[in-house]
Length: 232
Image (cartoon, rainbow, N blue to C red):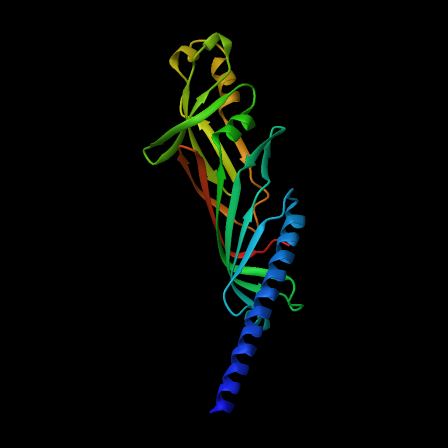
């Protein structure tokens, strides 16, 4: 009986050591992956990376990770010399294939992501004193209020619609007020302030933008992809 208790004690100790070793290994792998993503994407800060699934070492031996999650800050989109700051980008990579050296990643069978952008950052990116704010949704379109900075048209406010295609976010004024159409060149001047495109070329892998939704605190952009090239 005493021998059985000793054997059980040894088994428990070995199991604990294996678990501790597995957790140490996954933590080191997460730190290394975060640094590789930071350097490959040109980010100012290091992202948070979480490797899901247990045990980790068994996944490494099989060169396949169940899921890798990443939270990235410091991503920017550019257009016309201005930048649009992405408040936060979260991405989940599923069925991740490791390289033959076990330390590099090749691809993920699928991935999903979500980017958050504030109206303050949209306003800053528009430039020229233009103000962008929440307007809800209409007929299935995510909309914002756009206030151009044109002195002769004080208090002018138009409704704009947001859309996505590929890796680009587009903002277009739905229409220009009739009083502006009566003034030559007015509509073109308004649209230079209301119509914008921002290219999100720092998206991890080959994620493609799917849809954009306006919320009171900002806009939310969903992305996804298949056979995704992993960053780093």
